[in-house]
Length: 307
Image (cartoon, rainbow, N blue to C red):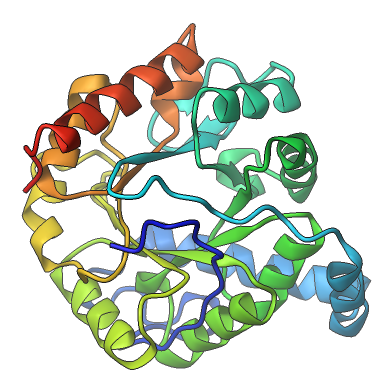
């Protein structure tokens, strides 16, 4: 695993995917949910590009302060904590009315290596303003913010950098080879890390093909264990898919991690990080929960229990 201070920058190629506005999302398990999110995302890009040409946006992005690098504990376990106001799976989340800067700073002080910030507006109540505020609060703590959204265009990667982000989420299931390549090349140009999200064996096969061509530097390999039709967590999916992930990239368990015991379990399964959102947003003491998760997972690692 690449665990030394990871100056994360990225690029990508991919396998079978979808076209503009979610074309083809019904093929090979592509869900209506992702199709809807892709269509909305394309519309947001069109509106944003009309308001601010890409050349001007790039100028703004390059003028912003360099974001903190993603730094992982060598041989250990890390946490990407998430800031989101709403989840389609559970609805409005407790804590959504709290001060955003205070919450993300608390995550960082509890030991999070990065903070994921939802910017999708229609189903998650997110915005780029939330990302910018989070990045500003996290910068003095040397922790990067990551834009979590349904990105379909390199323009959105530039938006992330212009808002102060140090990383972006890239969902392979939504993208064609050319689309994914363009997103990740742009991320690499802007020195952003990329969490590459997969859902099943086919996605991971595509990911392995990308890594064999590009190498793993600057990438995080994620498995999301939600069923895309029901949006419910699928028990056992994280453990089943972990052995298929590339061994030259940090592995991230996404969704389904809500307790210290869950963190211990996925550390034993071979994951290097967990992305935790709803559990932290709903907990009365998210800092204590984050610390408990890190302690449990790192104890499993130090005890030689990891697969």
